[in-house]
View 1 (tube, rainbow, N blue to C red):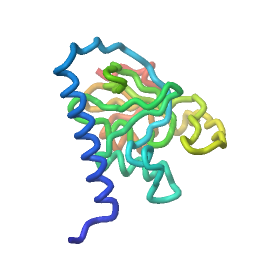
View 2 (cartoon, one colour):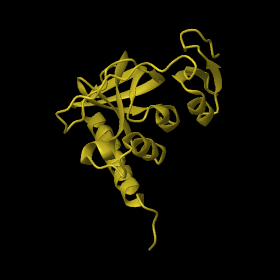
View 3 (cartoon, rainbow, N blue to C red):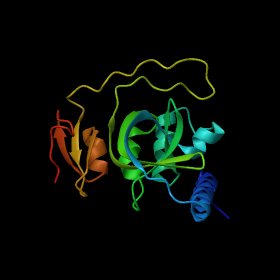
Length: 190
């Protein structure tokens, strides 16, 4: 049986994602859901498969992470407080998160916590100025990443009315309307 390279990895990641959701559903039968809370989180966007096994298909970790997220591998944000799984309602977060793959982003949304698991249902995402989190297995700290200059960064109004700060290509990937040099704080997408 011929498969594309990485198909096995996508299947494994999908099974892990289904198992994660199943655990949440089963746990939900045992106790009442705690109320979610509105949060703003900053950290590195990762795909769970590469993050957990520490293996990337090439030296370009951002590209590998982006491809995994677009292929359906569950995404997470690596914060100073640990790893938090990311979703965007029933439509998934791949289109929103792909431009921020393996980079720092600021996410806003509702944080759900249960049985030691944390999940954020995001409402917006934008590039963050924060210093990148160190590699999980590395002792070397990554250099600080400067904020993109205004000529390559702007607000992107998505078809669903939400806004993300990204570059023009990232906005085009999401079929949004791009506003160069602006931020989501300056634009009303509704």
